[in-house]
Image 1 (tube, rainbow, N blue to C red):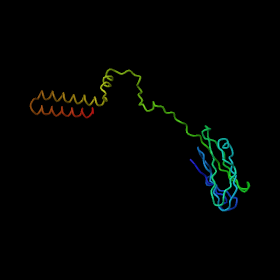
Image 2: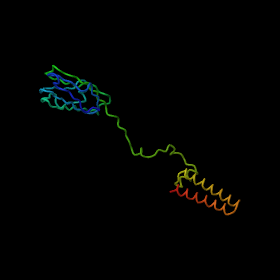
Image 3: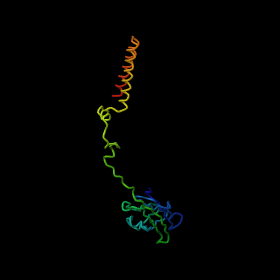
Image 4: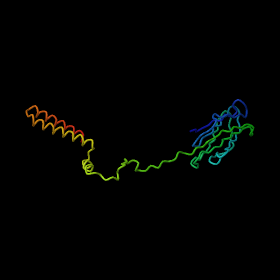
Length: 193
């Protein structure tokens, strides 16, 4: 949002005013920089329309030295509004013979969002539901259901290997059973870690 607008004073001709913006859209206070070109000037500033209800100027009259800048603080109370407020910043010089009016829209601040500590807790849509005996057993192990599924598949593979070794017999079948069992134990150890 805009924090500063510049109005050129006496640029090109005596008692001339020229703004660097066509309009101002803000939620905050802002400054109007009166930038003198050449001769000094007396400048009058005022707020018009509903803007005068929620904004204020420190003073209305300013003396701008030759080739210098004078800042006009426009204090806006956007907290006091719920809907946009419009009006104008009027700048006059040459005893009112020259003036510009810069349309101003002040928007209310964004609505605050209330955040409490419950937002940090993970949501459980079924928190009030009664757990089944299987769910209680899985919950009691402290392991994830996917880890328990891998353990079950590993134990089934070891059981198939044991039945195969007992049926075929021999050193090769027993060695195969040992390799499958070691693999299952290592996998379970890595998952439970």
